[in-house]
Length: 408
Image (cartoon, rainbow, N blue to C red; front, side, top):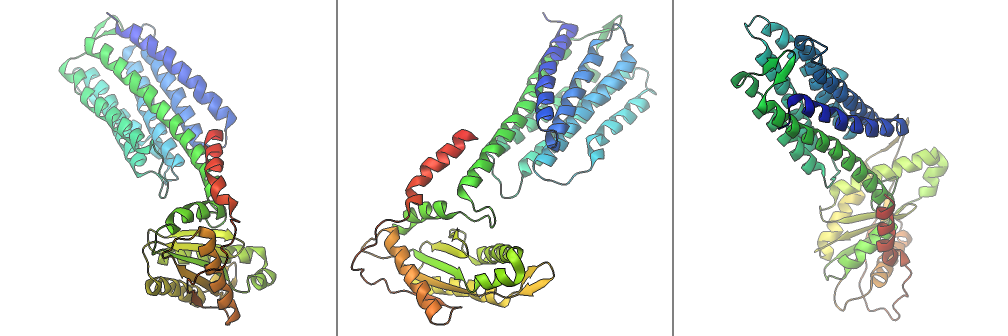
């Protein structure tokens, strides 16, 4: 049967391996604060474990204060790492707040005849509190981001917190015996092994989330316009090909009027601000199932599934009015912009996306010719010659996305 000292020695060796990995990650990415917090947590874990392994050389009372408080602070640092990772607000004292409360509780426990069981119990309770708060932070995540392992990590930390909470009464119910300065306890042996597994899982989940974030960034680069955050041309055409195959889908092509004049008057920053604010305002007014993308420059595309001509016109007119009646803000400048839009609603017989886009383009040119700042619903009359495919991006997207995933 394993004794406590042997188990703690195993903990020290395994935790040292985690420390080496975390430190290498920090050296390679010193400006990523979440990695800094996690590396510090690994250092605290090793120092706390070493304190727990030195009972033959250091009085147990001193080890209980130092090792216990360090152990609790370690879980607080892990929590701050996740807050930084998800962009959630925090204060540095939050890493040590619960550890300080635990330390105060240890001091007050000295008034008891035998304070050791209460002190040990407080360490488990403090760790459980930090881990539970960390699980809540993981569950909240980052708005607009869905990492596949985010909820799994939250569940791991929640179970870790629950395990620490369940163990907390054991020191009081089954006090640890000492042979000299060496603790003797059967439950401490097995629970230490259990918590070692959770320690490893905790750091592994942090690594998994970092890898998934890198993959998400690569995917965003492949599928999203870097300025507006909308789907880019390739992704829009890829998704629109699928959506346009269903009758009753409105396809619109929008163009911001006199955009070159905005760039010439207010500079490229003014133009960028106009594109970003237009995209934000339009997105707020579109249905949840709408596909909205930037086709290039000041040209945008919209697909509205399950819409007839009247409702689609109403939606796009609302967008046009909102854009034309609200100021664009760029530094100290204020200016207005308008848009022209061509719209077509798919119907049988089925046509290719190129054909539907050509009809929407024709409506856009008609809107320009009629004075701009208007939406034109184009009649889907039969085309004499369907245009050849000139959107190779749609067929290439699967390969591009796969390459991005492989490189992440």
